[in-house]
Length: 134
Image (cartoon, rainbow, N blue to C red):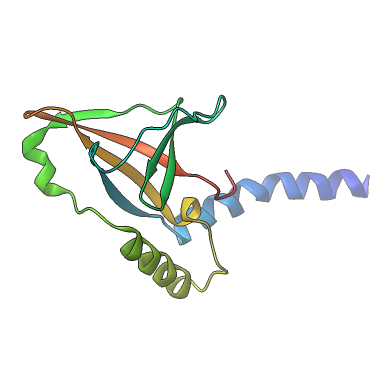
C-alpha cells in the first residue's frame, strides 16, 4: 500500500518537475549558413536519425521527422549566422549563466542550418548535433 502511494506521488510530480526544467533553462537559437562550395552533404545518413550535414568541424543531422521552412530571400537579413568559435563561447556562457554542468550543444541550442537555394528563396532546416548524446 505504501509503495502504491509513493509511486502515485512520483508519477504526479514528474511532469511538473520536467516542465519546470524546460522553462527555467531555455535554449538559445543559433543559425549556421550552409554553402555548397565549402560544406558537404555526405551520404553517411543515419537510418533512424536523419540526413548528415558536415561543415568545417561541425557535424549535424537533419532529422527525417522535422519539417524544413522555405522562405523569401528578403528575410535572410533577419538571421545572424554563428561560426564554431561563437557557438562554443555561447555554450560556455549558457553553462556559466545557468550554473549547470557541461551540457551538450543539443541541450543548449535549438540549431538551424540555412541554405540559399535560389535567388529568391532559402531553406531553414532544424538540425541536431552529431556525437552529442543523440
